[in-house]
Length: 355
Image 1 (cartoon, rainbow, N blue to C red):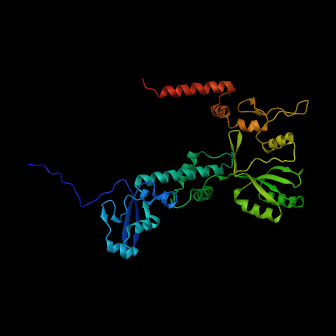
Image 2: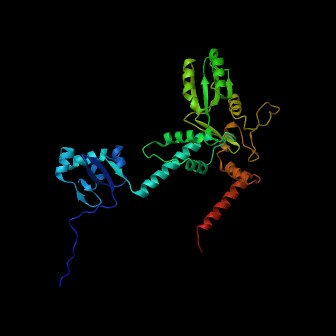
Image 3: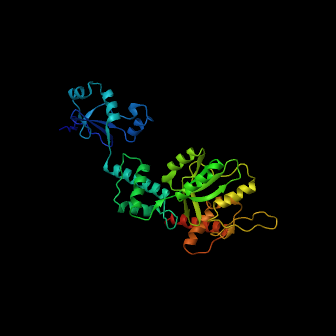
């Protein structure tokens, strides 16, 4: 007796596909697409329709392989051309995402929102940012739910407002430079004092006076209107300023640190030092009247002029000593730090092997 292989031919099941669904005239229409291609098509990155659609066929239920009826297509779309219908569904339909994929997307966006909140806020008592884990815990406590149809930045600003009502948290100040005519300087200073701005420096030696200060980001629009009325201009030096360890952290928005082009190099160095005078400790002048190297209290070492001093804070040496400082350990020299890091790398490599 011959064996006959029986295969189902009445149903076409499509699995592991991205489904785009559109409801029209009370009927549901679906198309089967390749994963990660629908958004590329809608953003204009992908132009080839064959790279997006698994088949130029319109279904009423993709998972069960049920095709849409021709009369329903004509009634809803006024055409029987399935390629044209597929394009309309692709543009206007709703992308169906699996539960795990949706959960992963929401989790990733939740992390992005928490990161933005961390970068834009500080603890008003310590002037330092909260950790990302602390921000996420606070967001859970206020029962924040991610909206996938809204941008992360917009939701982060809403989270900040809600957190400010319940917890000690405030926006990190912006560092702005105001350049206005000398006749209007007193008006600007009075207004900034009312806004509780933190004055960093005043430069009255140039053609037009300039004032560098830190203000609440919520007042930026008011500052812009004020400066325009005073026939001046403003420049954003840093979108947020906070302290991290013993050093200030500046989040720049394409703006360089303020330096007056009409000053010599030594004055520019002194100006940079004044901008960070609250956290920098410099040695007194020597007999020749020249500035000595700046000293890092964390590393207990001299690290060069103002520019080298700022670069030092980004080095692995300084970061390693910061971690030691939190553990109340004495700082290491540059050579000792390199040796210690190499030893730690060797230990981590040995852990990768199992004997």
